[in-house]
Amino acid sequence: MLTRACWSVGVPSRRQGTAREASSADSGMDIAELPSDILVEVTANIATESATPLIDIVNLRRSCKVFRDATAAREVGRCMAVQREWTLHWWDKARFLSVLRRCAASGNAEASYILGLEEFCNRRRKASGLRHLRRAMEHGHAAAAYMIGMITLHHPRSPGGTERALERLDWFCAPASAGPRTRRRIASVRREAASVVRRLTFHRWRVAEPPAPCSDPRCGEAEADAVEAWGGGDEEERRFCSRTCRWRHEYCKFVEKI
Image (cartoon, rainbow, N blue to C red; front, side, top):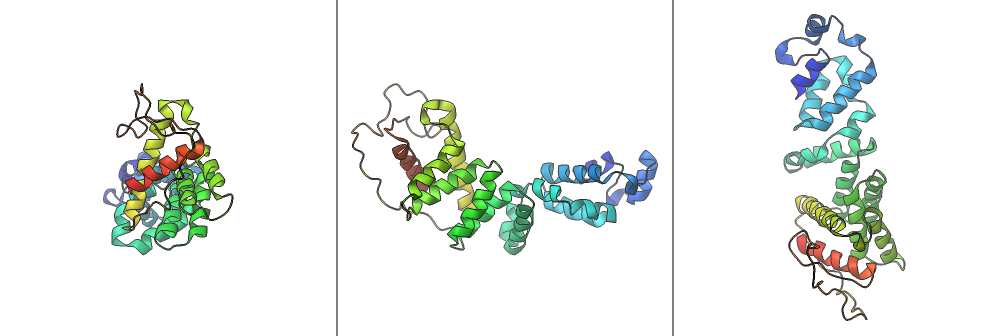
């Protein structure tokens, strides 16, 4: 990936010679003469598409001063595919978190999302964790909005906590009446969120309190003519009398997943 991307702007990898020699032979232009925005765009593309983005960016940074400056651009940190660097979490967690912080400061939604869960799950810093998650949500991260809702339902200590949780959950999801597509999205986000939580910590959640009984005796019943499962195939579609009951049910499903 790094070699191919470098050649696209006339810059070879170390095995192919120096950047100046190859760029002169290939394009007749010194790489230093290329516009900085093009260099940043190429570098950001590597950070986004590479299977090993951190290794490639580090190698590119070491190749020459021009790319060292390009790799320092905010856009590169924003585009870094940090979700492909989970191996680093196990081998060098301090470095992993350092990379996440730098990327989050550049507006990387996934980095803010993982940092938020790290703060909440492992460091017991709920306020800090929610700040990171809200930042990710502001950048359009659906799983961050989902986790804000789950965390708030898990710790409903303020009078308006449950309502705020429901607002966060409704942010990324239309009402259940929207149909199978919405239910599939909920199931997909649930799996994604549970997967990240399991990777970050061995601690498991317990349901904070049993769901309050609903006055509607049919609330939560499986639909007789259901053709699409709420959980993406592992349970029946259900009807709920309110969004509160629907999201309490989803909260219980999430806790089961982790």
